[in-house]
Length: 105
Image (tube, rainbow, N blue to C red; front, top):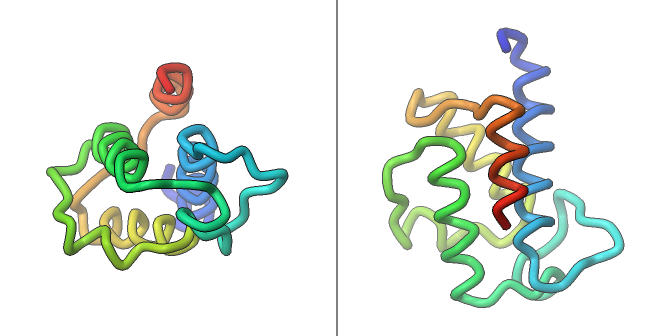
């Protein structure tokens, strides 16, 4: 994908689907403003599992607690991943890789 808007939309969708798949509480609608812990039921273990899934899917080096601790909402996670892509620290996954990852949840 070469168009920045398409990439942004695609990444937002991928992260949203990943968060929804790993969410302990199935909310009627997961949005960018959904709070991971309060609204979606993420506890520390499930947050670690989500972090590992993001690392694997986006081929990231291990993220530190300091990097991910400030992330409270789906939108913040989306922006975090987009920032890493902009820095060249990770790459967007292919659609088939996303589907494979979601099947394994």
